[in-house]
Length: 187
Image (tube, rainbow, N blue to C red; front, side):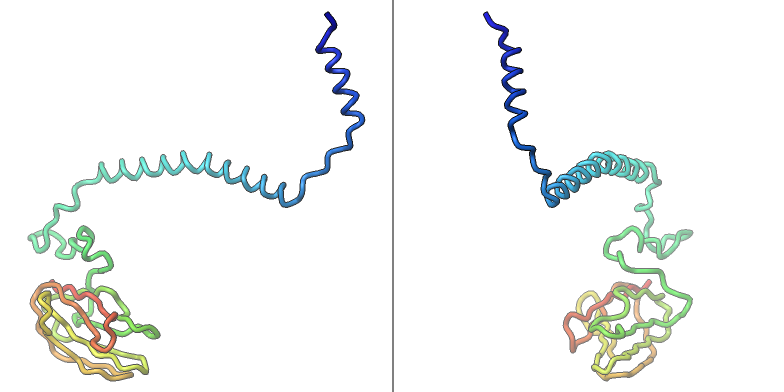
């Protein structure tokens, strides 16, 4: 029997010498291959890093003391601690040192400047300012929808008036623009 691998090798060698040289790959193909390689590398490195960060975050939150057990108004605790633990108050900050309730209209959009306004129940005044050329009004509604306080609509105006609100959650509404709503938290 003849040596088949040797004959096959010689025949392939002869054909390879007669074949034209292979063209270089197109630039777009080379670019696509490099992008895919870098995406695979990023996924290979990023996946484990993301997993480690997720595990660290879960472990940290599991080891943290139970913050959610703080009740509003409990003696000896921060009366505004519930802002951090209740999702309804996600965009609220504790009140500033100013004793008044400050509500203002955004400079250029039909919305209030703050999505959530916080105040103490002892706040003596409510101040409303609209710096736009468009008229806006303000209604303070309690949780039942009853209007507790209101300012009339006007452009480029600032109002201030005495107010006495009981502790609770209120809604700030501009009746001229139904999407203008904000939250007022009084404690």
